[in-house]
Length: 116
Ligand SMILES: [Zn+2]
Image 1 (cartoon, rainbow, N blue to C red):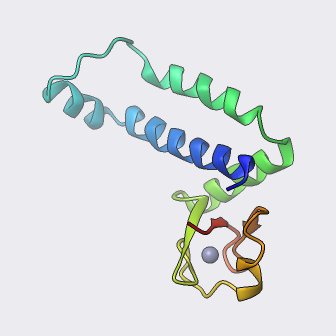
Image 2 (cartoon, rainbow, N blue to C red):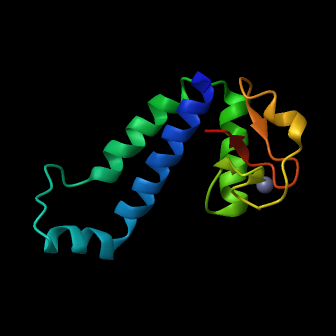
Image 3 (tube, rainbow, N blue to C red):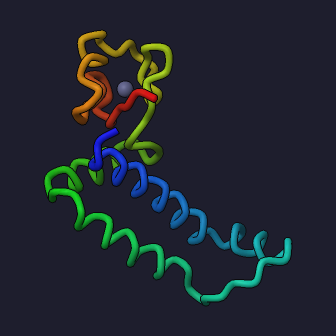
C-alpha cells in the first residue's frame, strides 16, 4: 500500500469521524453511554488533524479526493472485492490489478481503489 493511499484512507476515516461528531444525536448517544469528553469541540481537533494530513499529499490528489467525496457523499476510497469496485460494483479491469503499487481509480465511478 502506497503512502498516498494510507493517507487517503486516514483522511476518509477522519471525515467519517467528523461527520459523526457533527451529528448532535451521536454526541448525545456518546454522553448517554457514559463517555466524558475531554474537549468541548472534538470536531475542531479532527479538522486540525485533517488539515495536517492533507498537507502530506500533493494538492491535485487532495482536490481529487474532495471532488469524489462531494460527488458521492459516501466513500472516496474503496477496496476491490472479488474483482469488483467496492463503490459502484462494476468489474475492475484485470490489468489494473497488476498495478497495485500505484494509486488507481475505478474507471467507472472514479473512486480510489485498492486491493487488500
Ligand atoms: Zn467504481
